[in-house]
Every structure is written in C-alpha cells, then in structure tokens.
Image (tube, rainbow, N blue to C red; front, side):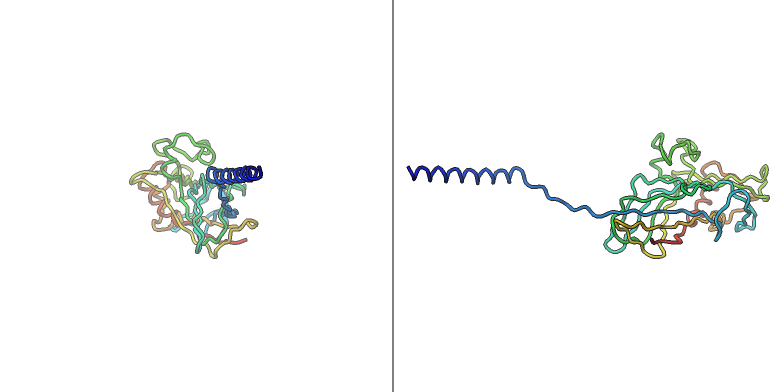
Length: 262
C-alpha cells in the first residue's frame, strides 16, 4: 500500500513537471525591451533682412543690385526635417514633416516642435525647402498642405515652394509690384532644395529638457547669389521655369542657425 502511494505521488510530481515544461515551451515569456527616452526640440524661425528683423509693407530694403524694395508677403515651406546625431546618436526624422512658414505678426506661425526625438546629442539639421514631389501629386492635402492656404497652383504645376511679394520703384509693373511665386517639382524645372545647416554648438535632447533652435532666413539672399536679381527685368514669377530656378538657387543659401541650446 505504501509503495502504491509513493508511486502515485511520484507520478503526480512528474506530470506536474512535464506540464510546466510544456507550458514554458508553448507560451514563452515575452522579452521586455526598454524604450529609449525621447524629448522634443523647439524650432523658432526668424525671417530677417540681413541683420534686422523682417518688417512688412513699410520698411525699405536694398537688394544686391542696389534696387530698393518693400516686402508685403514672404511664405515658404520647410519639409522632410532630420536632426543629425553626434557619435552614437542616430539621425532623427520627423514624421509627416511639412511646415508652412508665413511671415506675419503672429509668432505661433513661425514656431513648431519636433516631437519624440530620441535622447542624445545632435549637431545639425537637414530639411527640404519646398514640398517633395510625391506630395505634389497625391491629391487633396490637409493641414499645412491644404490648397486653402494659397500656396498651390494646380495638380500639374504643384505647390508654390516660396512666395515673395512686395514693391520696388525699379519694377516696370503697375505700382512697382513684385510677385515672385517659385514652384516646379519635376524634371528640369525642379526647384526643390535640400539643405544642411550646422548648429553653432551641439544640442542635447533629454526627457526633461527642451532645447531651442533658432533658424534664420535672410530675405536679401534670395536676390543675391549665385544669381543677382535685377528688379528691372525680373518682377513676376508665376510658373515653373528659368526664372524660378535662379531664385531657387539663391534661396538654397538663405538659412543659418543663430542659436542652439536650452
């Protein structure tokens, strides 16, 4: 009788061990990966005329050709933003990265946050001036890409990457009007420019800190180099072509970072 009891206990224990072993094999414990801490970077865009803050309508400026002019509108797209890491920090790419910068007195229109940036150190920023070719042919868009914003021509000619309007006594148009709407996303008329701007010092992104980056855009540069723009001969750009390409070659160099830090 005792032998039978012992044998029964041993069988029960063996069965339990076998059951546990099978359970572990059939239902392995999931491995938990610790998520990398993320933070954000606050981007502020400052439109300038040389070393002065850009003012609309009543302030006079001088271009490289010595033509005086005022500015009534200065809009452009920044898209496909990347932060370039230092050392072991990987490159950060912003999701759904399209920002319309509209110069006005409303500061919120010229600032935005890069979110979910992996913690680490970053030394520069890369972005496109304009809207990439895919989004130019993707049908009706929303948000910054909504045609209601007034920076879109048609599905054939696409988005206006940069819009400059103003006045100059040198311009042979009615009331000296300047209207330069720069667009074109395909083939020989492609005005899209990808630029990389180095920070004056690296920034550190962490969970509980928000570094600021000040991005300066100089309106004088779009008339300066490599193509000096003469308002007597170039006053209106309303379609893709040679004039838009010259302007795009100039605005590719209009950005600098003047501050990067907390």
